[in-house]
Image 1 (cartoon, rainbow, N blue to C red):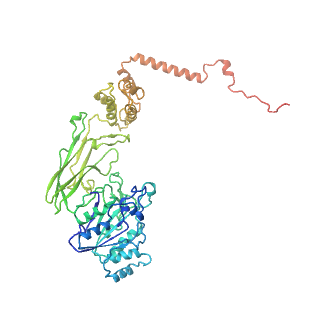
Image 2: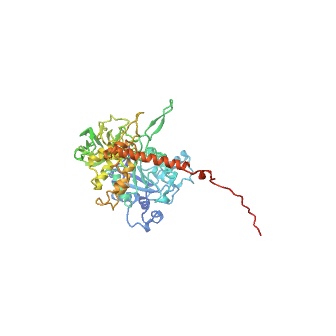
Image 3: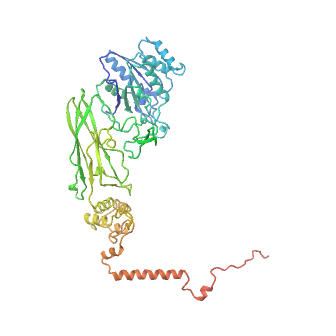
Length: 568
């Protein structure tokens, strides 16, 4: 269930076990337990492929499993040629189980057409010779074993010889089915060879028994259902990777007219969630339980979005399908991702049957990192659509049948992300200074988004995120005790109780705040007068206004001549 069928054209798969077939197995990873398993297998950097027999006591390679299948099915003839090694170099000596060589002259002719030299491509030539009479060619590519720092690479391309092997096989066998199998721990580029093959299986690193699993898929005993957990890149620039990249992360297309380009989504080899099956599934009748999600302070009133869709197996084979639900935000105060996976369901369906699949999306699922703080998630009024499947794009084509109607998010009128976080912390602290309602009202009452020229305050988040961070440093500490540590919340952090009218920048009307605390205006005025008088006296003292006449006439610094000659 982890091996992905990425391409399947010309009815290449599954292979018939009843039809006589000449099958060539070739490629550097087609007869190696080590390259199926990767690093941290046996040893830190994996098992040396030249000494596999010393490490593996079980397992099946692609060729080994195909050979076993042929022994159970007399209609198949299976042959092996290495072609090239893992570095793309010749490996002529490694061959096994060839069939009668009744077409040697054809291979020599092809070699002459493409201009290949015998001394440079001996291994490839041997593979071509057998490919020319094969009905099916299974070519396994891949990368060396690695882990951690020794695995660093400067290019995602495979060794050139591996690409040349595939090209040679197609030249030698233009009518044969070519099935490419990839083994490796990361997505190496396959753009040059994918057009030359009929089917692609992405096995990555499935382990020692990969051969048996692949034969089950190749023969159709298992209907593939895996989905790509990554976006598979097509180019070295990794455009379009990862799938939830910023909506502004686009590529350019030459239009041929001024200004010669336009922004378009970046082309990838296969999108996140891609994966084929031997049957077909149809999605229809997308339904939403609501088109508005409301955020309420009363959690019992919170609403959830329920998305449902009918899935039908329209093929002739039973199989599993994973239904992927993505959201596409239309706007946000921070740049949204192009799309985001919100949920998935995997089902099994017999041919011709239909079932309803549903998922729920809560408001918490829709939270995102806000514009003023990168460590907390907030909500915001907005609009989004739900899209089904890895290939649908509800930004470019919102009217697609696989895209839902728009859904709105509406928050409470006094919702402020920082206030929500601060008041949740006060409630968690166990201190009785605030009730949740009075806390939210006190914080959100000073929130402003005044963008006008007459705006007296900077846009703020009420008490602000630095205040939230301060509360977290105290309340989340294991030693915090609500019976004896509540004073710390107003001593180590800003005292929002005594400064209720001031926002996170210290802006606000202080007299009104003092009045709320019951301090008489006369006391406030006397305090201000005393402060001003003290400041004036300090200033005058610094300027020397309170010095005596003798002190003022005295030089601050006096220089005297000093003899440096030593007397003897």
